Amino acid sequence: MALVAAVGEDVAVTCLTRLLAGEIGPREIVGEPWRSVLEHIGDGHARRLDHSAPVHAYWSRTWAARALAYVGDARVAPWLVQALSDDHWRVRMTAVQTVGRLGIEGLEAELLPLVDDPHERVRAAAELALRRTATAN
Image (tube, rainbow, N blue to C red; front, side, top):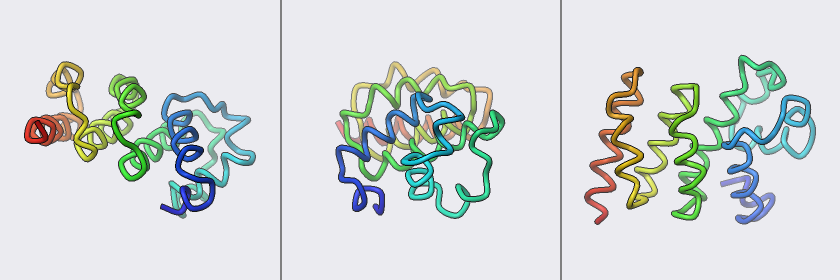
């Protein structure tokens, strides 16, 4: 991943977990280093969005959750668990997918409620993640 090549794995994971947790405010996210981080994880889409607009705030959390699937491991579980209750369905879905891709075990209790999520894509991701983590055992 280009972000890891640019800043190193530990810094990348720290940046991604801070984004996923929503710790970076709208004023801060449009400046450096966050603009570059978003361009690494959001590709061309990141360049087209106004990240200071609240309506677009979920994208940085979504991209961070997705990127953690490639640079994360079980140590990012607390941030992914927090994202499972995000207000935006796309963040919940992507966090669930990342749990499944990483094969993080022991999160069945946190994943099970998402099988009944209001959004069908979150429900489908939760079912798949539960199957993946069950087979990881």
